[in-house]
Image 1 (cartoon, one colour):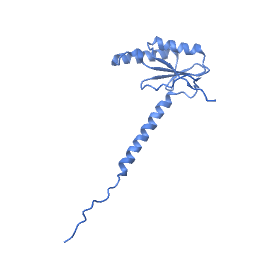
Image 2: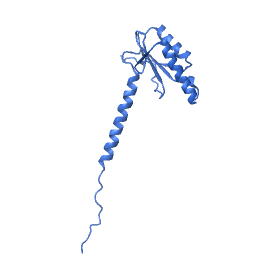
Image 3: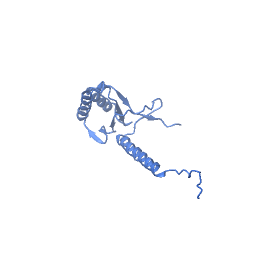
Image 4: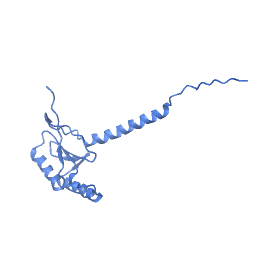
Length: 146
C-alpha cells in the first residue's frame, strides 16, 4: 500500500495574466497621453504667472491655441475666427440636443502665446462668447523659480 503525502503542492504565481494587465495599462496610458499632447500646440509658449493656479482639465474641455502670428488651432486644425464660431455653435447646439444641461457652460481654455497681441486674444474671446459659451479659462504656466 502506497502512502500519500498530505501536504499541498506549493502555490505558484500566475505570471501570464499579470503581464496582460501591464500591457493593457501601458497601451491605455500611451493612447491618452497622445490625445492630451495633441491639444497642446508646441508653437504656443503660454505666458508665465506667479499667482496662477493649475486647474485640472475637464474631460470635454475645448483647448484653443493662438500662436504669436494670430492663427487659431484646435487639435491641430487651423480655423479662421468665423470658422471657430461656427464650430463652437455646432458644439453648443449638439450639447443642447443631447440634453447635457446648460450648453453655455461648455469649458473652453484659451492657450495664447506670450507674444500674442491682446487684441487677437480679445477677438477670439469675442467669437467664443458669440457662440454662446461663457465658461472660459486662460492657460498660463508657473514662473521659473529664482
